Length: 229
Image (cartoon, rainbow, N blue to C red; front, side, top):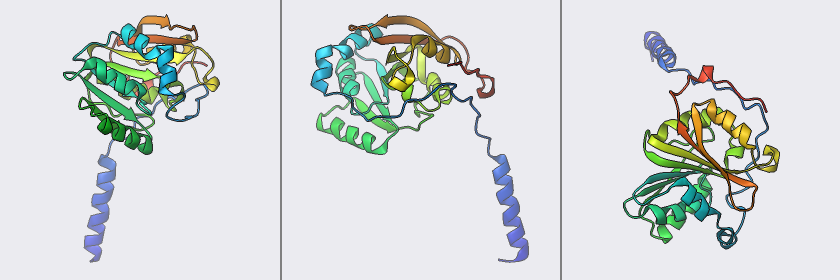
């Protein structure tokens, strides 16, 4: 390569770098973040005996024909049960950030012939959901493990259809014990203009459901105010 050609290549490369938009800068979580402990925490039979999924889907108003997302789907416990409720005319998108978990879930979906389910790999701060696509987005026993909650919610909230809801199911205990107090959850979602429309403790008393609607425009990342722990 001639000196002139080399210089031109360098100039073009630098121009390309300058043309790329900067990555948004989000505030850090002013609290601990629970480590990911695995894609299952109980046998499915044991979870069925507690009746949590049935209660959650009823409170969330899941109906046939809906499009729903199961974010942090893990082994697919909620995914397969949501698929049965929304039926053949509905759709379920199951997302996880661990490639091996995603692959195992994809195998399960194929074995169980769940034609209304798609499986997707997301990232720790972006579930990679399509815009304005879901009547319900479920975050079940996973929000306390999200490493960058404000970036995660910033990307997630615009995947809700008009009139749709984000459904969070978690335990009322400190984050380091794999839960999140309801007041902390409400504060963090309020920072992304997500307002609670329903809050209820489930049978047993420690696990709760909170449903949120989009209540305003998505804030610019630099204007998001992090909640105190």
